[in-house]
Image (cartoon, rainbow, N blue to C red; front, side, top):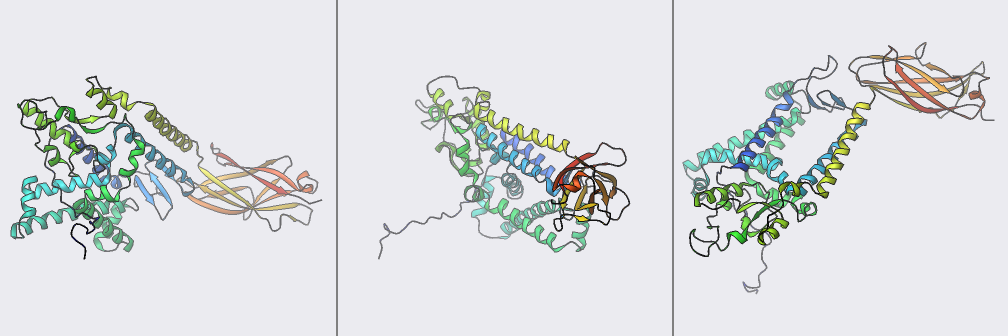
Length: 473
């Protein structure tokens, strides 16, 4: 039998619910504005219309899975142009590295979807159940009519938020007004209902119940961020050399901290920043607002809790003036990230504006390499695929240039011109022919450049290099 002293300790700690107190201040106001901006953009963006003509959808932002294209206002991305999406992901990663190296986990504190929706859920919870003390009393209260009524109302509002969240997401993948009508009438595809249910459930659970648990246990970023930070990174810290020892104000020997726990009560993660930087801290700044409010009331200088770097701590302890914010933000590491971020962005813009309105793919027929016609003409066959990215059908003329004269023929037509439908791909069989006395007909291999240009006299002109096979002597 093992004694209590030798029993193994549990590696799991049951969740202690966190009830953040309402606070006003600079950082709280900033979070409200950012939340309104981001949620507004997320919910409303699928409903923005953009006229692209009769052949294309008129939704400004649309990931058209059926048409295998992504539309973003005037920009249209095709599957073979996925490098644009890859470039945007690289820019997002570099941006995350940049902001983390400059100001710690500001992404987590202000812009992460988990933070934004948790803030919204807490706002609803506070509206239904009251501020921190009222919610604590209700949590400890036995289940009665009041508790049941408030909990059901809160959960119902959370479900509506989850439903709006899931609904907004699926609207990005098809025409929003049409899908909304089909969802209400029961005519939407089962995948739409399944996705809506999953996103509603996860938003309801993560934003309403799991909250800080997602940030602490599920998200990998708190464990990665250390590699992005250094001694000049701005992050939230407690100036313990100024605040300790804690005690009543006005008592000789006491520091500025009166141990009111205002910083703890407003923290959405439920931590005490006075214990030092912690993995759970999302650097949202609410503890700064709470502490500054108390400092104002007791007549002490602000920023007992504030954004500071390790180098600032060393300077302040020595009585020196800390570095300016800009010297922390603009330093070799952040400048490097900014340069890389800008380079990728400029590269994407250049590639976007230099891309052609038509793509071509040429595949020579290898079996046989060539055929000899009755008059001695040598013919090579090719599979030609033309993709028209424009919103209207276009005629394209095809020609060939090489060291020898080659004639272009298109199967099913009398000439060298093809009509490619709007926003579609046309596959045709193309032939290159060389007369019996042509150099190309009498040598094993001839390099050829195919030219595709707008038959109507437009500026579109691209080329594709291939080869012509003649007689093997």
